[in-house]
Image (tube, rainbow over all chains, first blue to last red; front, side):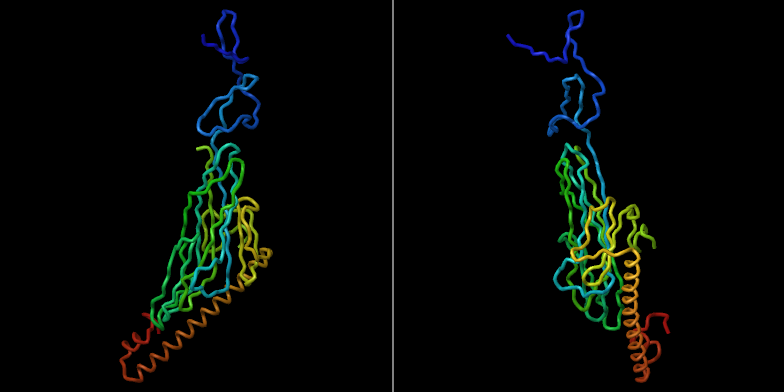
Length: 196
Length: 109
């Protein structure tokens, strides 16, 4: 014969019926149970308080930087000249966060004419741009030309309750013909989604 | 430009970044890092922190140096174009063609 176990959250009413007692409004405090990983279990605490698992949270952060001012010859091989960096806190103590990063980089280039001058830059190893001044000697100087380009990354995660630092090296390279770079500007915008 | 104004050429929601630090690197470049919360980013390894006033003064100096360099290059260009034009005219090339061959931009004397 099957056995039915009844906890203290059940009481028998005057008519002999089994009633489930639940108390609303348990004290606001951290989720006292293990964090759910694949289901959404309700919990009843020893004082008959009913709990639902922690809700999803989102967080955002931004950082930006500039550097430069003096003109520097663009090297032939790609060389790191700046680093976009941001530390992101997981907004949830319970769930792993997925992280979307938007990395925006803008570099000023100076390309003389007559030398087939070239330059480019990379974000996180990804070549974003290759510039060339193909005008002949006596042609146009390209001074302070720049593009403001984005790299988007979605592969980042942060453990529950933790933080992670995300960095993206910024490299200039593919330089020839006397090409130079000046100011470098970067901005990182980050969205962390936990429990979704 | 005050401390909260985004640098020229880079706008967007950057103005919301409240925590700003300024630095100078080993090569003499200057820069700034702005953050939505203090300490979430970092300065380059060889950076020395400087004041906003120092940053603005040194950046203005660096930009002025670049401007002087570019002005020199433009002056050299103009001198070469003028010389080419004179040589072509001396060789009997008509004015309009001499200007085109020498590379005078359209509409410039």
